[in-house]
Length: 221
Image 1 (cartoon, rainbow, N blue to C red):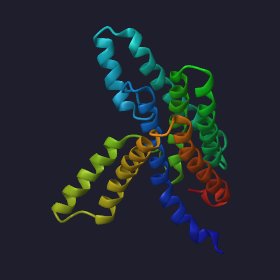
Image 2 (image 1 turned 30 degrees about the vertical axis):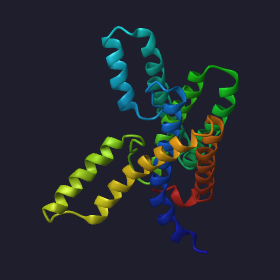
Image 3 (image 1 turned 90 degrees about the vertical axis):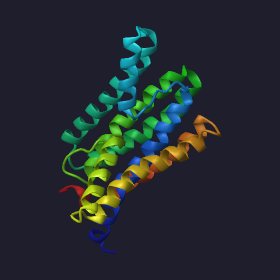
């Protein structure tokens, strides 16, 4: 089997898998606390914390500030791994994400619910760096607004007879990956947090295995 022929297919599918996983985890984290706090959608958290601070609800804002800081910390750690481990960072990053998601299952049993969401937020920040797999610059993994904006732009060009259908459907599909992931995460939470997290854990472990298997093929992207 010629592995070099598999590379384009694997790499082109990776953003959709990662966005799908992020959608699942975000829905799980949101439903887990039932307070409007996201673990990967930082735009929503930023707006919410701003409103809380404006209303002098400082105590309630602490959780949102903590999640935002941990999300940024996850991105920072992931970027450091990418710089220091250029040949192996992709599978190392996803290994760390898998471990964090697994640890969230156990942390839920021994401490307050907010601690679980802190772990999930750190993991989602870290996972953002994994999208360097397919592009030279990091693409924000959870910025659904960007995918919708790009979809709108591509649609405008299509209506003017200047667009590319493939680009339009790609941007739309990237948004749909998050959307469908959130639907899956919501339905999984009908069971329990522990069972719900098994799906993204398995998905991230599978991605990790693929990246380790293809690490020699992706070093020069």
